Image (cartoon, rainbow, N blue to C red; front, side, top):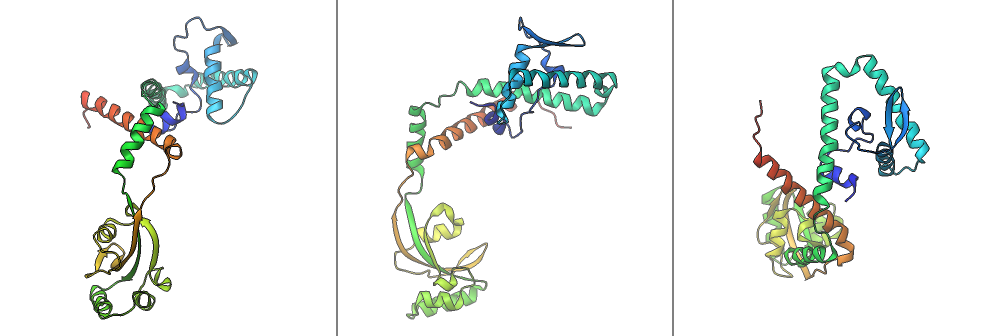
Amino acid sequence: MSHRLVATLLSAAVISTIPLSIAHADEGDSPTVAIVNGETITEIERDTQSEQFKARGQNATDEQVVDELVSLELMRQQAIELGLDKSPAMAAEMKIMHARVLANALLTDFTSKIDTSDEALKAEYEKQIALAEAKEFNASHILLEDEEKAKEIIAELDGGADFAEAAKKYSTGPSGPNGGDLGWFDAGSMVPEFSQAVAAMETGKHSTAPVKTQFGFHIIKLVDTRSKEPQPFEALKDQIGNMILRTKVEEYVRTLHDAATIERL
């Protein structure tokens, strides 16, 4: 899993450059690539910085990466000389940056162990398809601001008035000039009250009572229904993978919260 995706799951962008004062952790026997006023810059630091370039969609040679690290080290040293690292605000910022880097490392390690094989993704795909709404609806509606007016129009429709003509005459919605035609849609694309009313209707019939939503009062006519063809697995593969990772990360972070002693003051 990429650093960028993990950062998205954290809902915070990973800092593009790891401060050298943090990166000077134990680096083992990593060879030195530069020495700046006695402070070493190692291959690990260079390679880490190179990955940050790639994450930003930039290409850089090893020499360019080292040049940037040298500049950062010089500025770090100068900032310390000026005492800029002593302010409470800077200490807080460094603490947060450090926490983000380590949190990103933690989630990179955690997500690397999650099964995102084609077999696992296909199983989740089948599960989601089984839960998904299997129908699409073709309907028209007349949108009104006043419930009593809606009831009057329903009475006209009951008496044989043409639905499309009534929509053109009375509807305040954008589909009015087209006879109220909404075309084909699935339940998830409409507000719940509207979708529930449509799903309960008989094809060819109109509402027997106004349907209230946040937009006003609707008189609905269900024109037709059809089976909804699910998108193929390959089209949803990446989306399903990201969903699995996001869900697992959220569960993991929740377990950390549950196991911790947290006092909010």
